[in-house]
Amino acid sequence: MFRELDCVVLATDIPEDGLRKSDVGTIVHAYPEGRAFIVEFLALDGSTAAVTEVLPSQIRAVTASDITHARTMDFQA
Image 1: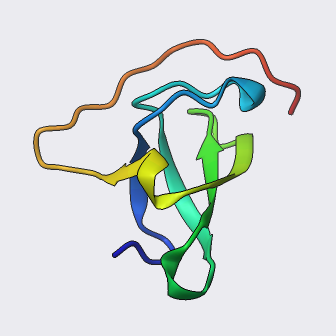
Image 2: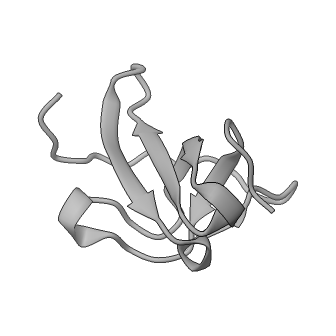
């Protein structure tokens, strides 16, 4: 089960927020019984790129074989 402050990886695109599968974020709020989560995604300069609600099926845990990847994202900070 996921908890607040866990780093997670998107398992699906969320186009309305400009997010893509494999983007990494941090859970900032967990709803009761883990039915949904608020996840914050940061740009590498520390600014918030997106904050969005996701279902458990839309995220996965970070694994030891994951690596970070940089991409350009159009967003208004």
